Length: 510
Ligand SMILES: [Fe+2]
Image 1 (tube, rainbow, N blue to C red):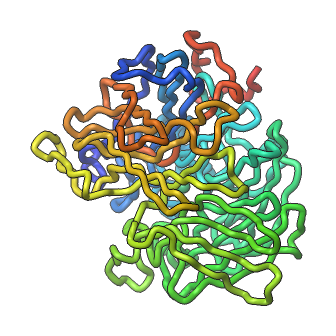
Image 2 (cartoon, rainbow, N blue to C red; image 1 turned 135 degrees about the horizontal axis):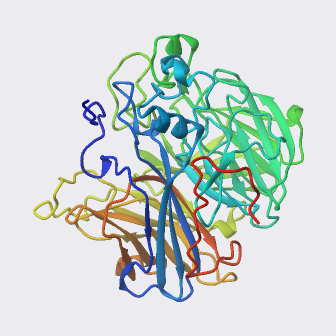
């Protein structure tokens, strides 16, 4: 029987599925990991276990895997595990893919009827003692944060009735609460939004239900100390699309972007929708937001149009590569005004980062200065004489943007390295904003191996202070998450045992 991945359009270089899990203790380290780094870096990745069932399947539909780098005293241990979603378990039993086009149940094998579509492949987040692997179209998968064992698809002990949960919940650093939202929250094509408020211990305490002005992809949002900010986009879907067997999304430039703002202590009637400017506003990830008097101010990368060719234009037109470029914008909403739109300022003119934007999360919801962003910088030239797979537009730089002073600092991991989203690690719990390190994964196209690279966030031009070098390549990443040891204590050097079940017993973490 032929068994190959040639039907997968993403099969070359680092995109080729790895299909393995690993435990590696005392990884090789080049340089010195700073003593102040004590905690766990998680990353969510996409990695197919089986050749795709649908001929044009996209990486967003691949199985989710979690990688874990645990760091203390200048040493690092590594572990990776697939998330045992119900989908993963069913496909493993069937020994083939059962799920079809991206978020389209009508294209699934009949054997997948009634099963969760969850891939858990977007964001890992630790909250209330749980590791949650998130995918915006499904509830969280709950995992053991030490063993990476999967426990269950999680409805917060029966408190969440929404059928989905964002991959971008926000943890308020001042209160310890987590806020999250669900879109298409009562199932495919539903215009229901749910806004969730969770106590620091992980208890879902309150959900506010509102109606969306348009059913669209709502990948990220923002919170301030007083408000939630919910953007819609022109990435839309329809029953006709799904019945035609296409993937869930297509881009329609005629659909305006709306932004809903609601007080955190408000109800559905308090949601106020603003309508976007005519030059389109495609927002994937936000950097930060704050409320100043009657104004809500959001700093965020925004593109003019479709951000990803894997989601076609609804009119069948060709993909506009200029329109996908982000600029960092400052959107100001005046709650005291009767205007139904917002003011926009483009920060850092002419600089086009990706939408992967991070900050010092201790300053989320507050006035802030620094953001850390992923992009392609042609000034960091690739050395394709040494690479085994050619590099062209790969993301190869982290930029630190000064949102108050306008300056930019730049980091490269080397001429054969691509980068993924960086996480900021404070030098100390009480260090000033931006005083610490950036950590993230780099792929080395000369060796075809992956590394964890660490840079001093205030001296990015100096390059890495340390590289944790893995003797293999990792799966392609979506988002990461840093958890300091004072938030998630662990016993370093203990060989946290995997409990051994494919789809774990529904036990609580002790
Ligand atoms: Fe995201």
